[in-house]
Image (tube, rainbow, N blue to C red):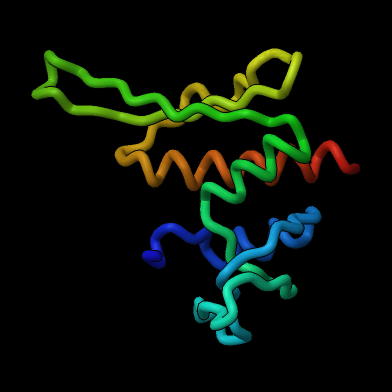
Length: 125
């Protein structure tokens, strides 16, 4: 697995604070260095999930779904931007991110993950 597949340290810590409990094959050491567990899966204080695991956890535990949209502008040399959308099961789409634009899919994905963390934190208050 590539390091880019794993959430960053700050998001891994925030996920553990809101109850992320899926077993992971990597963790962040005390110096914030990503390390892989030699035995496969583990449950540590600051586990490093993949983005896929984190988004799956939001779907399964909190009924939060996301979508990242790519928009191409043909009149502007086919430039592109990315946006994300979040929807809670049986609720309206969250609209406060519609003005945000990201130049890469990965930037939009990270912003979406941060927003999902924020949503869960707000719901738990």
